[in-house]
Amino acid sequence: MKRTVDYIKNIKLDKITIRDYILILLGAILQAGSLRTFLLPAKLASGGVSGLSQIINSFTGWPIGVMVLLGNIPLLILGWRFLGGPRFAARTAFAILTFSILVVIPLPFLPLEGITGDIVLNSLYGGVVSGIGFGLVYKGRGTSGGSDILVRILSSWRGVPISQSYLMTDAVIIFLAGISFSWENALYALVMLYVSGIAAESISQGSNVLRTGLIITNLPDQIKEEIFNRLRRGVTIMNARGGYSGEEKSILLCVVTRAEIPHLKDLTKEVDPKAFLIIGQAHEVRGEGFLPFGDD
Image (cartoon, rainbow, N blue to C red; front, side):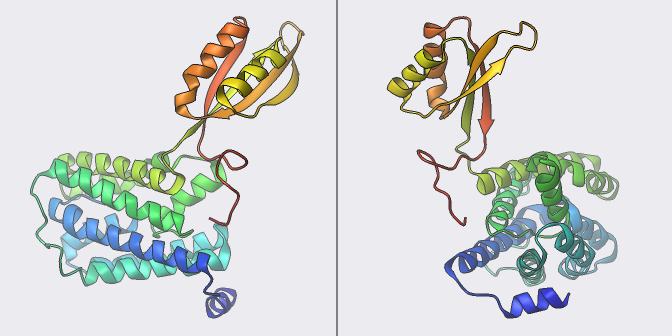
């Protein structure tokens, strides 16, 4: 804990740090706005500590913001252990505190009774707005606390996609919401959480998902030249041997955009109809021809 306090005292306000905290602030504002405007009026549990706080609030009337703040303390300790120590703790504590304050003291321009009584619109827009908020906080290299911490641990430790992690960590909350509110509301809350996860993934990782092509062929030089000439993309050639036939082959690895996939298929078929082509997804590519390496 002393290490975290010392880190907070010695935070250098460089451009990256300032950008991170601005992103976290905007993300927390969107999450709190989504909760007050779409989720609370429609009785849609938001998942995690805030969702659990909604359920408790419906029975006791205790302030949601205060319960969110207190409930995140043990999870903050867990996140400090697994997700980056002091830097994580400082950013996440800032996100939790901002979110809790804005839930207790809502933004004055947001109607407390909500914008619409349509539960479908509330679940969709609530999911999109809160998901964008989550994604901005992730871009700021923090989390919003609660199940976000568990989501980040699953994502960074086991490579579980964000959208799937939300469903895994919030299943218990959805079940309790079904008991507390109604099973119909719980089903809509499940839709909201999935939409939120997709939006968060899109914001934090980017929507421009690239494609990787693996081409197993006996004509590597010919295919390489066609990729150079038609797509203007680099190629890495690796030597391989067939596990069944024992035949020596070459594997070509290249990264292309989604629009270039048909061209890659066509040129591969034209040069070597017997080639084996595998298309995969690359969520982020850095290097020449793509995103530069940086601190973001």
